[in-house]
Length: 99
Image (cartoon, rainbow, N blue to C red; front, side, top):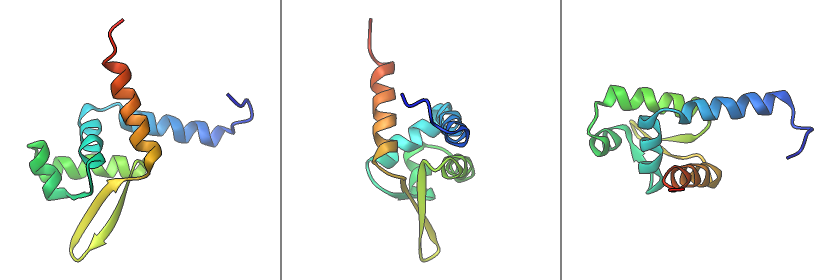
């Protein structure tokens, strides 16, 4: 690991891991890994309220783990990039390992 990583990058990384520390937000990311969705579709897939899903998405958006685009009146969410997908995929696989 490069010892020259600046403090702001470490703080951004810590914020990402904090956002990932909630099982509900992780589940949202896993659903989004299959393709983009709007809030209503996510709420239906997660069997949760739109308000709850919106709150999760706000945290994930601020941590730059998801991105949002507008399509008419709908906000469409997707995984921010392949780094996020790989991070979540690897973390879930690691948690499932039996030693």
